[in-house]
Image (cartoon, rainbow, N blue to C red):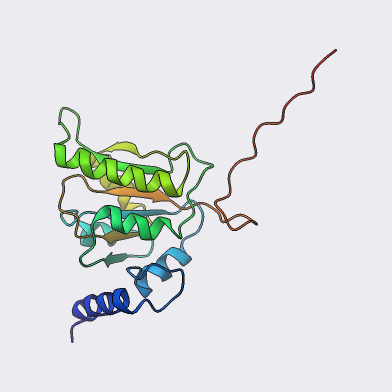
Length: 185
């Protein structure tokens, strides 16, 4: 059995078996290892089926291109964001591919980005997907830790997330609110 076929069969079997409690069954062993291996500040690209994932992955820190068979972008984000802390200490910890200057986002692209933004926002309150111009997105992706390629067919279905820190309470670590100054008499 080829390596690619093995991972497809393993992903399907895992999805049916649910071998771990509290872990989304679409998260493959290889993807779980990547999520755990990432450090705070590392980026993860979650890409559509048309993204040049094989080429981009060769430039990433890990060199990994993980394929999630039968999974669209929102479903992949649902699983990944259930475990991955988002970096609240940077200005733009979550971004999406946007058309190049002068281009327009197709309706299907708007739809997939809206769905992705809803998922990210549900798992990371206050975090929004920031647009990243298409060619800049490729450059950012090449500096990521790894690429996760989905079966998303809608255009511009590409997201990059920056890993944050799991705090002492088990949740995403967030900056302390600014201290309130004492009222002067």
